[in-house]
Image (cartoon, rainbow over all chains, first blue to last red; front, side):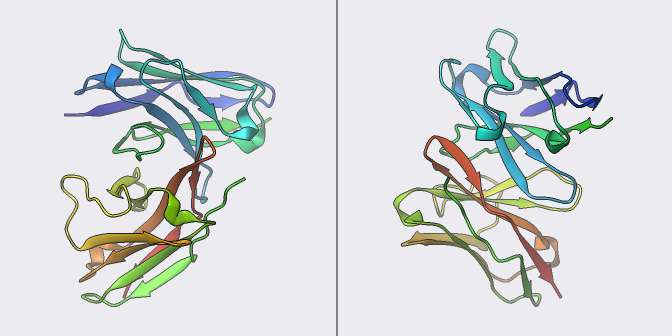
Length: 118
Length: 106
């Protein structure tokens, strides 16, 4: 069974940092591209970043470029999102999702809440 | 930046057909996929590559993509299909989601 489990969220002040993790199991992690997608309370889905299988190609939403870094550890079947210089606009539920960005994401985690507030 | 436009809401009677559109410049030149998100749940991929259904998705979900419009069609709509639906494409090295359409079955 494919499983994606996010962790590392929480409450942080504006300007602060968080590192999200996504532990995966049930599939060959190194064979899949992975993405982070967020959803502000009561709003739609917003893509944040994607990384291809070997980790050499990374893509970002313009508003997070230079602040967020997506990475992966294929030996540990894990995906990460380092988030720096957080602003209130980054508040939302962050999902880890499996799949290359041009093909769609066929499995999603349950999401982890990130709240940026003073 | 590339934009996708969806109607905010669609209403349909049980057993009838619901059509949800997604509009974008030359959308038909690329593949679109669609997600269903029920309240309080994670998104579920219901169509990829315009009209392919992942394993476990009922065949009442179908899709098309031509010109500037992609369409998700739900035939024989059931109450369990009530959800938000999002289209998505890969454009200019970014993932773009439509704003979402709330489908109400009444």
